[in-house]
Image (cartoon, rainbow, N blue to C red; front, side, top):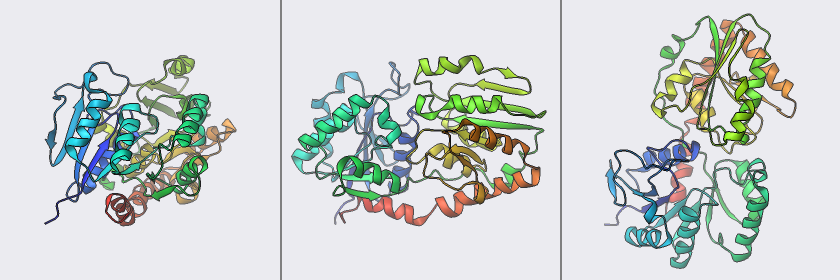
Length: 384
């Protein structure tokens, strides 16, 4: 009898890490969806993003069976090509799944080994080929991509695009002949019932929340500026959660994180993943004026917890206002973001509750789609 297909996932950061945001959740959701169909091995580092100390209560450099999923956390002495090669040989996978373009340890080394041994390889660029992403350290990134194409590093790989736009981003660099499969990210399952969420509303204040990495590409400074400029006598709260990836960027607007008349803006540090659902459910709006998202886990998680969103148009999620899901705005003019925030504050309670219901139901009926599961399953099957 033929056994399960072995899938080796290489990723720089994984659970219990969470500071890297979306990619960790994307991989965890895939693994949880298919752990009974495929045999998953996850090769990762023993450190969270930006940390020099390893995870607590995790044994390093050996495979651990976590409810049917095999995970190995490598400490610094094994973050090298010899160790990666040894682990790939030990697992002998049918498929190698990579989750970065630029990681030497967890993409370039496994990719070279897979190419040499003709192992089926899937690469999820995780938004790294988006126009806004490539503008950050552009010279270095574009030089790398030019060299990789010249040397054929990505020849014969399968590209995992989360959206049609990401497919276009991949084609813009690697051409129309690139083997690209679109499979939207699998969302987390809902934890809270709608009636539980509705009972938390009508608090006498309007609360905005930001839950994302604090980096230039996320445009948190635009959100702070918009909320500072609202015209209202209501009590407004804006709670900011996230890993500070760019200290200089954070310091450029840190002085504005304070009370402004009736508006209170607070940075509350890192948010434990177990608290995300309640944090969204207790908020009135999520705000994310990002430069680019290939998917946007924070957006989807907000809807799954009945929290309408105010986002930029630089995501796959469009025409939100007519669907009662929130606002997607053109941030080239900051006034558009200010107007959306103001409109959210001024909504009457009945209209707001309809938006809460629509957000929750959209997640159930549109995002939790069996076709999404099937598209992801096909990625790892032996059909291609």
